Structure formats: structure tokens, C-alpha cells
Length: 173
Image 1 (tube, rainbow, N blue to C red):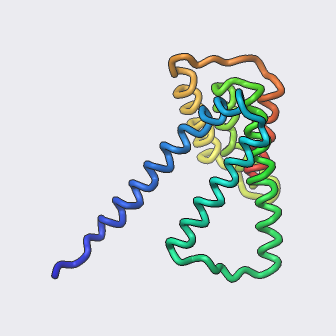
Image 2 (cartoon, rainbow, N blue to C red):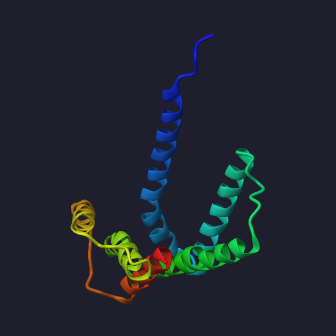
């Protein structure tokens, strides 16, 4: 019998990442369409239920159902869930009902910058030239891709953009 192919695990991981990227790419446009016909809270709640079901299935499939967490860790997870999941999803869906998908994508691209600024102020991490350059290149790349898409429409700043920024801050916190 031959030895297992170490590349097989790499291929499985790459396939999983490709699926995740495809789903993530459809995310913004799908929520934009849904918020045009459904209530914002229905869309946000549905997204959270689907996420819980998917993650529960993954935990069960990998036999990681019992995590053995301490109460203090559970409290931290509840706070993170409130900000990073609930508040983020409600603000995300609400913003897309009030702005264009193009504006939303551009504001969402500020996520790494917001995370970096929060880390530098709360954790005292150094910004550094390389980190700042990476942020600028990343933002420029997103802008080029988003703005060069056929049918891309932007509007001036609006309340939906502020809601999206609040969503990004909640997620980064």
C-alpha cells in the first residue's frame, strides 16, 4: 500500500476556500436584493440562523460538539456574538437597504484599516510603514475592482454608508 498523498489535504482546503470565497462574493449582492423586498431584521436573522446551522453541522461532522469552555470564556463569546454577529448583521442589512452595493463594498473595504486602528489604540500595536502600505494597496485594489465593474453606481455619502461603517466597526471590535 502506498503512503497517503499529503497534497490531498491541500486540495481539500483549497476547494473549501474557493467555495467560501464564492459564497462571500455573492453575499453583498444577495443581501442588497433581499433587503429590497424583505424587512431588514428578517434578512439579518435569517443569515444568523443559516450560519448557526452551518457551523453546528461542521462541529458535528468533525466531532467537535463539546468544546469545554469556562464561564468567563462563554461570557466573552456572548459579548463578541452580540457585537460581531448580531449588531454587525443588523447594521449590515439595514445599510444595504439605504445605499448602493458599490458604496457598501467600498465602505466594507475599510475593515482592515478599522481593525488596525483599533489594535493600535487598544493593544498598542505599532502601525509601521509596511502595515500602512499594505492597507493602502488593499484599499486601492478593492476600489479598482469594485469601481471597474459594469453597472457600478456610487452615490454621495448617505445614512446607509454610516450604517455600513458602524457594521464594520462592530465586526472589527
